[in-house]
Image (cartoon, rainbow, N blue to C red; front, side, top):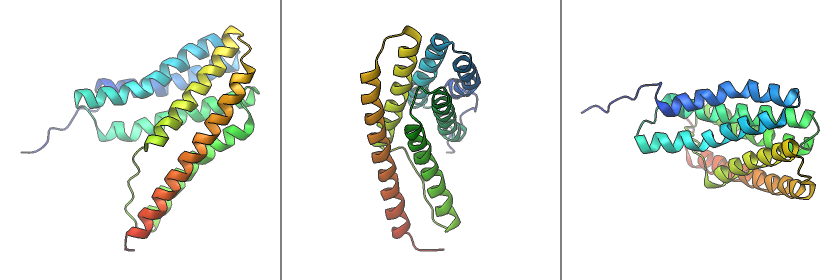
Length: 188
């Protein structure tokens, strides 16, 4: 019996699409200095990143569309928010370069593997999920500090270092996965 195909516009995918739609609004809020609105919207978007996947698994409504859209939505949200906060001098440029470089490393690795005729399927690693959680928490911390004037400079500095360490560890884990996958498969 053929497996029933899930509709593309199920609730988890609608949540993911809403996350994409929030990105320009979040960037606009940060640009105009409305950090409270940015904090609220980014927190909702960050929470939705975890909620949509959990809901899809719970309802058994996972789709190929959602599997492709979710990481795109995540990268769009994180990269644009990190870049905007960097341009506003609220997150160090070195950390932004590290976060974006890790994502580029993964994308380039998958593209190279396909170019080499290797079948590589990248599934999120546990360290990658922790990485995403820390990156989201860092933005929430920075926006909370800006919105509520909490003076969390020491905590922010610690969060920058912790996020950088996990980002590097995640990049190395994907690099290891890529190398071992490429070496195991015969060339086409």
